Image (cartoon, rainbow, N blue to C red; front, side):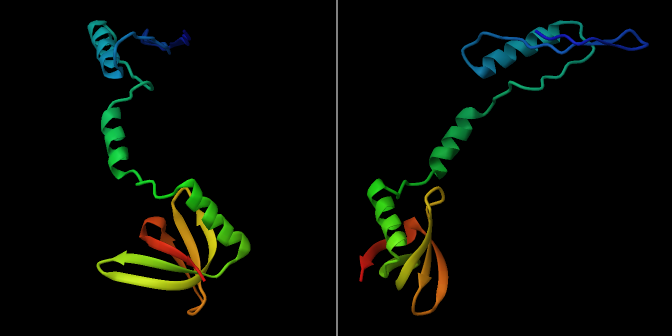
Length: 141
């Protein structure tokens, strides 16, 4: 427990305190702490850390918006092999709404965290960034 005392002319004192509360959940602990603080005759208080409300909501949203985990170890190895050998491949891309592309290209870069592939289209001499979930197939020419 740390206690720093600051005095003022009106007789007010400021203490910094760390309190451990035993409870089944963070919300229950916070409720218990707030009840104890409200029952005391304190002029004011501020809780600066330890509040973790809405964790269940955050976890549910993360799961719902989480990636469908398109990337597997074999796909990762295959993509990295295409980059190392600078091999010409054909990528079948499904852009949605019936738009399909067949691109003769070389894989320039791969970002596994964002599941993003950077492709150099050899006919158009342009670079495209494609999400892995948009790719239907890799065909080695």
